[in-house]
Length: 201
Ligand code: GRF
Image (cartoon, rainbow, N blue to C red; front, side, top):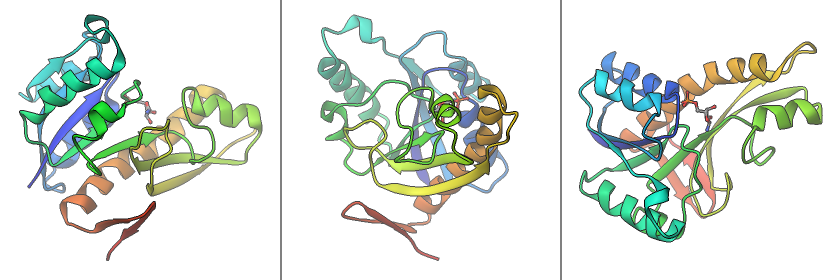
């Protein structure tokens, strides 16, 4: 049973997808804490609905991001997570956090990395004029969406797409791929060699 800490900044639909997969009996994991940088994140309410412990830590209470990430790591360590899942967590983690959990942090990003990292990925894709878009689950390093790629899913970009319609099509894939990758990790199928990730059958 994989012990998860999930970090959210907002809506938390990816958190919900993980919860749903656990509830359905198809994900050998439990969520020991959901943490947010924003007290009003709806993801916190989703967690509470299932009796999952929640914590909020505001960057405003710390002098800089290094201090904040150190405090965040200490808080999360208490829950002894095997894996930390960034599910719509909008802050870039620094080594003050990442060095505490080497190769144990994954993120979901709504683009086919390395294209369109950072914010407004779907708008970046539309503005560029690409014909396919998608989402990526990757290990987190200190860059912005630059870590080793574990899995990607592709969707078409349609001529009449808006940012919202494209985001919705990508989100459907996010909700499938993120719990699936967590299950692969729970089953010990994911191996990281250098910056390449191999998923065993
Ligand atoms: C998702 O599109 C995720 O890929 C991105 O932020 C969004 C979060 O959505 N990093 P939600 O909070 O999981 O609903």
